[in-house]
Image (cartoon, rainbow, N blue to C red; front, top):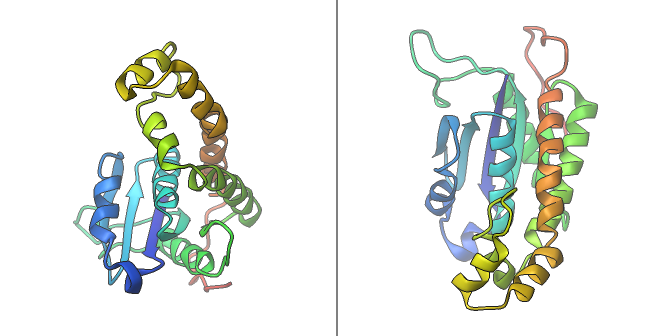
Amino acid sequence: MHFVLTINQRDSRDVGDLVPELIRSLRHLPAAVPFQRTVGDEAQGVPADAAAAVDAALIAVRQRRWHVGVGVGELFPAENSPLDLKDARGHGLVYSRRAVERAQRTGDRVPLAVDGPDGELAAEAEAVLRLLGLIVAARTEAEWKVLDLMTPGARGQQKFVAQELGITAQAVSKAVVRSHWTEEWATRPAAARLLGLAYGPAVLPPAALPYRA
């Protein structure tokens, strides 16, 4: 099972090509296939696991410039070759393409979609990721200055963050509460678990998988 992310730019005509910037922002994530430009203003990658897929999706949503499609399914490399998206085949790619095409039609909602063999669980994963996306996309630059210095699960760090930024610990605490940072990190494992479950208990038949809206 793989998690394939297809991410394409929403406004390249207005702000120019941001794909290199996106790829740099995703470079630190563990990946079966690192993110790379595929064509035009689009990038694809295969995070190492469901948690890394959630990380990648939310990084893209934070930037407010991207449609994000997450496909859950198998990938197979070309014969005698390492896994590479240019030559790979498998339903993971098809699900990812279907998802990003649907993400392009979300209107004012979070432009993120999930597709996989178990449609109901994929829809549940999508719903949780969109809720997380709402939280992430709504944050201000001032809040991000605080949150980017925070480590999930670490205790006693707000005083250190306050010293680094030259603000009070109370201001840090308010930013953390206002931005729902604790709730976000408590919810991420649920999103990752649902992504994994979207693969379903059954193996897909070898027949071609049609696109659908």
